[in-house]
Image (cartoon, rainbow, N blue to C red):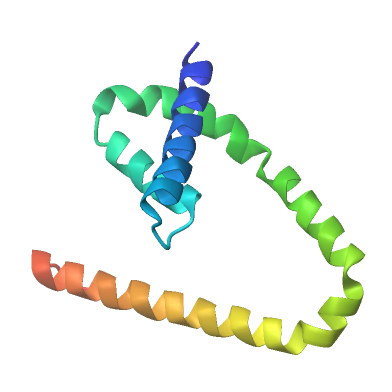
Length: 117
């Protein structure tokens, strides 16, 4: 029963995020807003067990979610050949930017708490 409650909570957060993104014309994707809503929901202790019950099987089969992406890449190999270098540059630069921002946020958080890195 916890699995169904957890799936319902996950789908509710994503649906609410989609609805908020469309109604408020926010320049963020609905799933990102849904993730923020889930983060707020997880502050309530009662939601931990159902969400964990739903997340564990989803994470166990996470690799299956990459199959459609792989098929899409194979289907559009010509586009990958044409734009592959640009896509690789975008992936590398965005990864480095994410790592840099994460490091800066961690440094600021550690400085705020007085912990040593």
